[in-house]
Image (cartoon, rainbow, N blue to C red; front, side):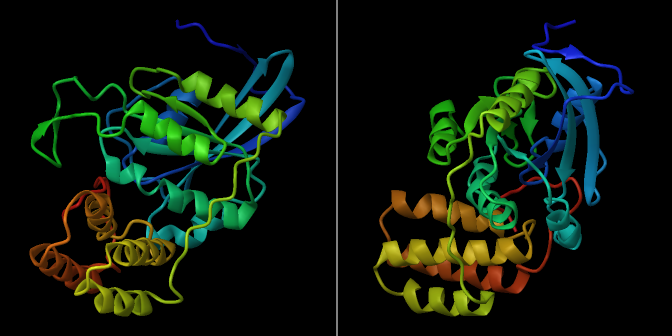
Length: 295
């Protein structure tokens, strides 16, 4: 058995502190796997989609103090939206999870941060880059048809965590790497009152208004305004449906625009993408489907 930084307590034992922790992030990043690994020390290659919330508890003694962690793995599916936000109440800490092999899930972290901060304030946060076991594993990524690669580096993940005053760790639920450290780090942050920095993500008053604004800009050459409008449109859609099938493609454009010349061909391709977004943004990803640039 691997060394643990705490002493596991009996489930019937009373503890000095009871902390409610919420685990947030896109689908298929390993939120349920992380929760089950920590609470039950088990890992499965497949999990049933979280319906509303997956709940786990663990009691332990850490640094001389006893704790009960109530861990709420919250679903992001649009059809469970009412459940998702109602379960945020009374949480004292947040774990934000992305998949190191899927940068699109990393690009959604500001949206998840903004959502929880609007509902429960600037709680302590641990940012987690999960699935560290997949790069160099030789397994094939179904999204690309090629072996898994690490798309988000350690420095990039830590930079985002630093920007919101959060702890950063890379983890593997499958390999049980840094899972215990992730939760004890959050306990430390809660005890030390290391609150996250407020992150404001702008949005349009309506999705239709966002599309109209973006259509008016695309034929011009002001890439900064196009980029800002893309960010706002993305958050407007995210607020309505965090698992919209178009968010991955929007993220792909957000990632691409600052890196390449804005030519007439790029403008034409962006217009075509926007037409598809407008048609399909209300649709959600299917159960078990990872965030992808494909629509």
